[in-house]
Figure 1 (cartoon, rainbow, N blue to C red):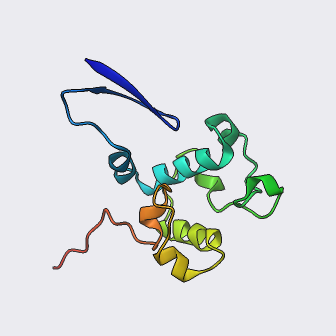
Figure 2 (cartoon, rainbow, N blue to C red):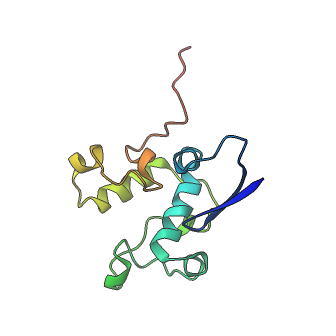
Length: 127
């Protein structure tokens, strides 16, 4: 038996007898590039608007041209962005408040796990 779930631009077809893929599992599997792409889709509204984005709106898209977006170059999910770039966006998003970044309430943000400028998918190995 297949069930289709609709969750903000993501349609999953799952077998009800198998493990259900939750929103948290989807967010955990995002690479920095995929996280940026998802952030851009959320910011712009849809994939077509991301493609046509001029890169001149840094957050608050409705307030007009207010700065160059840090993610413009990576908006289409291509390239290999640095997690430091995500940190830079988080600093901008929180009004340059480092305390808010540490206690960020936006746990559903695709950039959330990269907000410290480190990739939690990589662990330091001794040797």
